Structures are given as structure tokens and as C-alpha cells.
Amino acid sequence: MPPHVWTGAISFGLVSVPIAVLGATEDHSVRFRRIHSVDNGLVRNRYWCEIEDREISYGEIGQGYEMAGGRIIPLTDEELRQLPLPTARAIELVGFLPDADVDPIRIGPGYYLQPQGSVAAKPYVLLRQALQRASKVAVARYAWHGRERLGLLRVRGDVIALHGLLWPDEIRDPAAVVPPPVQLDEDEVDEAVALIGVMTRDDLTGPEFADRYTEALHAVIEAKQEDRQQPQAPEPMARPGQLVDLMAALQESVGKARAARGETDVPEVPAKPAKKAPSRRASSRTAERAGGRRGASAR
View (cartoon, rainbow, N blue to C red):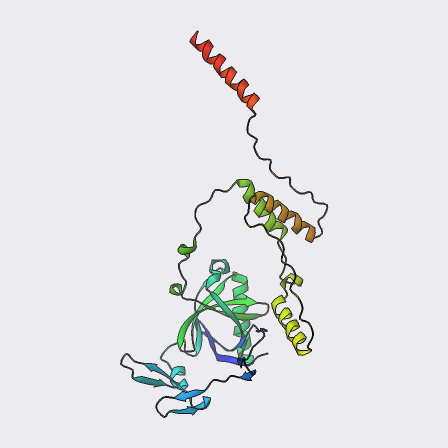
């Protein structure tokens, strides 16, 4: 497991659970170094003190708050740890609600909470089982990295996970990106729901969920390292410039999704025939009958 990123306690009413916070996710992204493109030399950052006009080491760097007049108020890590906040060394549970009531756009990266010592194991398991039985998640407050944060505690397997939550004023209003009004047929909505049903998965495992970008990037790097031809990108699928028949595209998508799942025996829903305009001859007969009815009314 990764090293602890924070230690403290979960404050649950009068119950306190000593815990350590560990990262629950890993970043497998390929990292690049900045280079001088002329000779491939590494480009490095330097830390420069404006008062002494010299380069300093990373260990000499602290942090400070700049006032309106330019004055700097230095703050040490110890002073930040000793902030007069009840959440400075504790994750304080402030409420509970159903998981479905939390807007996913507010949820941040996840961490695992590990009980510290045998004494902490019992209240930790108690909280975990209580959350499971109540089918609830806990909303918490805690202070990390110079600010108080809102968090979400939920059960994942046999452990309790912590997610950061954005404050309500940190979420932008989506009104600016709402699409203009459109007219949809009920059949189009039904077909889109059918496509969702065919593409529904039990989990997120399988080749469709592999990190193809990282794999392709490694292939290019290996080809350059071995001085051989780089792999070529596949030809993109031909797509129409403008969507003409939405219903036909949906039905074709359902058919392809069923074929990908091996459901070749499932018949495709035939496209809804377009309404034909009445022929000239039929229009003439209709006009004659209408004229006859008007004549009979006149008599």
C-alpha cells in the first residue's frame, strides 16, 4: 500500500476512530520530461530568491500569504497543523444521506481509511456495518492542505473510503450549455433506450476499458528506442458529415451492439416507413368527391 497522506480520527458523535488516510487510486500516465528540442538536453527549474538574488534549494522554500500592500506573512507547516479548527486533526461526521442523493459532479478522488491499532478496529467496523445496514453515506468536514473541506464516507468492500466533495459554490451553473429546444418522436426515445439496454454491462472489465492511449504511447516510444518504423494509426471509421436519419442510425447501432454481444438471432426492428405524399390521381378523386358533396348541399 502507499504511504499515509494524513493521520487523524473519525469523529462520530462521542465515538472517535483513529485512522490513517491512504490513496485509493494510482496514476499510470506516461510522464514526459521537458527538453531543449535542439539537443535533447534536460530543462530544469531553478528556485530564485528575489531579495538575495541567488538560487536556493527546495529545502529552503516555505510558504506565505501576500497582503494587499505586498507584505508577506510567513506560515509554517506546524502553524497550519495547529489551526483552531475542530477538523484540523479529525474527520468530523456531520450528517448522513442516501448515496443516490449525492451529485456525482461534486465527488473528488478517493482515499482508503485504515484503522490505527486494535483499539480502533471495533468502532471502525461498527461504523462500516452501520453505514451498510442503513444504506447511507456519511458527509464529513475535515481540514487538509490549508483549507477546510467537505467529504463523503462510503463503504467499499470491507473498508471505509473517503471522497472529497466540492462546496456548492464551486459547481458552475450548467444553464449556459443547455441545448436549444428540439422535437423528438417517442419512437426515437424508445430506440435510444433499447440501445442503452443492449450496451448495459455488469462491470467495467474487458478490452473495451483498457487504457489504449498509454498502450499506443508505449508502442511509439519502443519503436523509436529500437529505431524501427512507428506503428500506424488505424483508418478512422467513415462517418456522415450530417446526421440525416436519427431513427435509422439508432436502429443500426442497436444491431451492431447486439452483434458484438453475439446476439445474432435477435431480429432488428424495421425502420419506421416514411409517410408518402398522396398521388395526383388520388388527389383528383378526393377533389371530385368533395365537389360532389358541395353540389348536393347546394341543391
